[in-house]
Image (cartoon, rainbow, N blue to C red):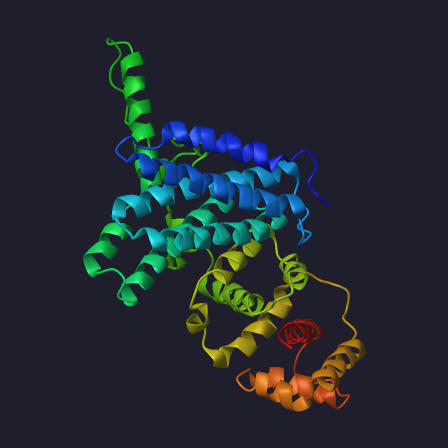
Length: 360
């Protein structure tokens, strides 16, 4: 069902008209037009997808507006970065499309979880920057650009420049407004230490904050054992294709933990962060810390898994599961024989059963 009161066409036009007034003057007319058109097209695509809501995401008009605006903002800034870095025109659209898709996917999960807006913006900020840098690195690895151009592109960050200019202007205005007889005040805290809301950038759109330590893997506030558990959950969910099942599992966690899981779902190469020999033990530990739920029927789990084996064939599943942990394989093939593998808890068995259903 379309989202009521969400006119994405008019909204995209409005964003584009704002952007046209805020494009840096040092760009050529063609580049200015490219920035505005890119922002407009990304806004239209995102807005249309949200409005039609074919994936039944259930966003409100306000949420759809915010998500569209975030995508528009990053399209604006990153198109400028690509232009100033000198990345060839034919490769820019693909990079910007990947960035827009990344934002859309993260917003989809985080808004569903009801995470605080600042946390959502931090996650998006981190992954936009990562997607951008990964894309530039990929061009270098393919021999399309050289080392110097890659470094130049990596150093571009129009959003940080805009925030810095805004902060300097605010500081200058404050200094001019202060009475001359009043002694100078202590300098304001840097942005990362204040509690002020996210500022607006020079293009009139709300700015995500610069990348902060909260998104670095080495500075997560969780103790390592808990973080390892959350990363393991992220690894499992990353491989599941059914978004509804992913959502059901995420709802077992509180908002902060769910946000951490979502963040690690979008980190490439996260599989390398966990020793496969320890994942089964971690899953058992997770089962003990999950909120209490109605006891899952062992008989139903066995029956559902057995039906999957019969439907897709034991040989096919053996091939698909050949690299899985021993207990995962054992549970599946015990169920194929009508038996419950007692070395896994019902909660873990339920996760395995959902996972198997998503990969066949």
